[in-house]
Image (cartoon, rainbow, N blue to C red; front, top):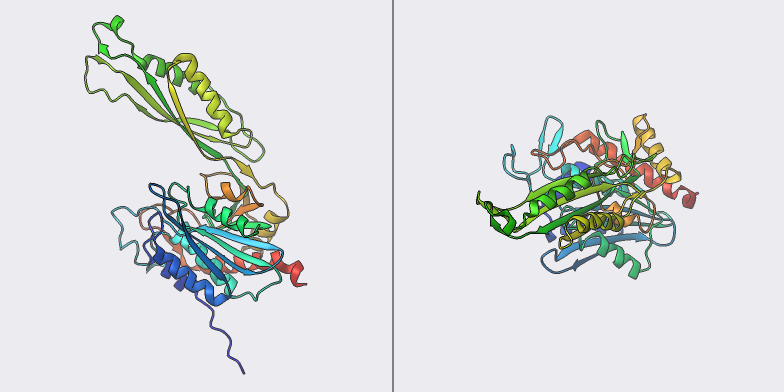
Length: 383
């Protein structure tokens, strides 16, 4: 009689990933570790480097098991933000204390990746395809990460029908919130030239600060919208004002500002950039504007996919999650271009903080919820 296979322990998997220092962009060792977890489960694992300095090279991993439809994808990232000083223990030595597992990436988001791997290990192969889309550059510029993975999938003719991203979306308890959309993000740099001169002779100079303050005042008065059914109001924030003038008696030659706009699906990034550019041109025709759209707003309307995930959460926890679009950007902004995307993962209270930690019980619960989600996705194919 054949012995039952030894199933991987979700806590041990999480510890193994945390122990690989992977400050963005993630180093190869953490991908070696994940590949070692996936290959025994029947996944064909492809790893590749993309991009050049300064934003690259970036390592990415695409793992695929099965063929045909449906195609269910799980997406995530192995890179982490720098831990910074002040940790109680080494941030890359996973440490258990009081029912918590501490370590950089425990919540964001090595714990979720480990939970998904442990979930898949408990589920026999289905008629259909499961893929893992894992980047080493989500916390950084994200120039050569998930975008490159999408391109690689397109070249292989792989298009998911549904994608679950393991970002830490829960707030007070595991499963209380899932994300069905995100606001877009754009950063804008404004430079207003003037003419340097002595403050006692203003007629011989041209103070750019006057025009910059007029520009910012007009921008401050903008109300982009009052929100939508699923999104909070868009907002414009001034994040930096710079003159760089150490002298008290000199009118500066330049004045600069930086804006950050988080916008809902009533807007497009390029349209907002043009609106700001028009304001600058009215006040400072020689002014320069540089805009970088980090991602467009997107919404996966509530429907079968979000209901499936909600039902799986309710089955394991007894409560229904809130459907939300709050928070910052994620790589869902890229993946939403190719298929419906929902984000669901661990409690986010300690992400990016000192002594980042996940409740050990939550790792097992998340594993079980992920297993339920996968089973529900493939149930029609299994029936």
